[in-house]
Every structure is written in structure tokens, then in C-alpha cells.
Amino acid sequence: MKSSVNERISAREIDLGNGPVGCFCIHGFCGSTYEFQGLAEFLAEHEFRVKAPLLAGHGTSIEESNLVHADDWLQEIEYHFAEFFLNCTSAFVIGLGMGAALALHLAALFPLSGVVVMAPTFILSRHILPWYWKLIAPFNNSIPRKSSRAGQNDAPIPDDYGYSRYPTNGIRAMLKLNRYISKELARVMSPALIMHSRDDPIVPFENAILVANTINSEDKSLIAYGQFGHVLPDCPEKETVWTDILNFLTRDTSS
Image (cartoon, rainbow, N blue to C red; front, side, top):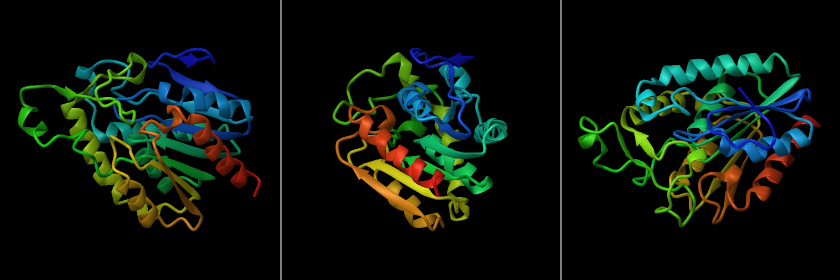
């Protein structure tokens, strides 16, 4: 299924624009393509071809998300990106959270024009992964999920933003994925833009430092935001984030 400009449906993929340069966007764990809808429209207006697939186990149910393995995410993202890449003269990958880790995985495999890494999730905070989750995992298929917006930890999760709870087996799969991709970081040579909010309530800022210090891209930069929260492409200051991304994309495509 494809989304048009005004749709806000979390269970649909985004497929916009028809320019020769592609932007492949990957949403976060328990999130949805809604996180990228506004950015996708913005980039399509600037003549990029934009695609954001829905990851396995998302847009369905907690029960289905608990059946997904790390290999499922790796294999499907490789397949979808390779298919997308065939229709582009060059391509960038843009990821948020777990999607940022998957973006780095693609950067380790494909000759990208660049990779945009937003709030990568290699080191998790106690907010997303409390100490007791393994103890309750055998008895509960999920744990509570709080808001990813800065200063709004008790706010409910909007339906369009994905699940209101974290699947416990899904967390195990994400941790395994993180361990696998962390071993690939030194293989990343593509130009890289790393973006993170210092007050991110989900993912500590030290993740951005980890990525910046480990990848081997000669062209890499880190933007540290203030009160922007976790979902950077759809935060209250999203236009600033979009502009920073566009500047990175156009700088590289014109070189």
C-alpha cells in the first residue's frame, strides 16, 4: 500500500516523488512510517524519490511483533533497499532509532551517497529498558511504552506512532540486532550525518558519540540538538531537522 501526501496511516508504506536521487527512510522500534511522513513530503517537494517501508512486526499487533527475529529485519531491509536502489542513480538512507542502526547496516553493504543517523539505539536508557523487564518477560508479552517527546514521558502514545507497549520478545530481537550491527560500524565509509537530541528521553546522547567515533567515514558530522526529543523528523522543531538533512543531501549530490 502507498500513502499520498495527506494520509497519516501508520500501517502504510510511504512512496513519494520520482526524482533520480533516492532517500530510503527507516522508522524506529515499535514506531511507524508516520515518523517520516512530513520529512518524506518535504524531500519529495525537493525532487527526491522517497520510500519508507513498514518494518516486520509493525502496524499489526504486539503478538505478531513478538514473532519477529533480528534476521527478519536485516533480510527485509536489504531486499527492499536493493529493489529501491535499482530505480535511483544514487541513494541516501535515513534512519531513526532502530532504523538508524539498520541504516548503518545498509551503509556497510551498499555504496551510498550518504547516511543520516538519527538517535541510534545501541545503548538504551532505563526508560525504554527497565531492569525488571527480563523478570516479567515470561509472564507478560509486553511492557509499558512512554512518550518519546522531551518532557512528556507520561503522555499517551498516539495511535499513528505505533504500539503503546514494547513487545518483550521484540526487545530481545532488537538487542540482538544491535549487537550484530555494532560489529559492522567500522565498515561504514559513506558520508554520514549523525543527529541526536541531548535531552532524548529514550536513547542516551552517548549513542551519537559512539557512532561518530566508530564509523570510518572520512566525511562525517554530528549535530547535537537541545530540547528536540527522540522523534527528530516529527518533533516540534522538525523544520530545523528537515533543513539540516536537506543541506546534507544537496551538498553531497552536487559534489
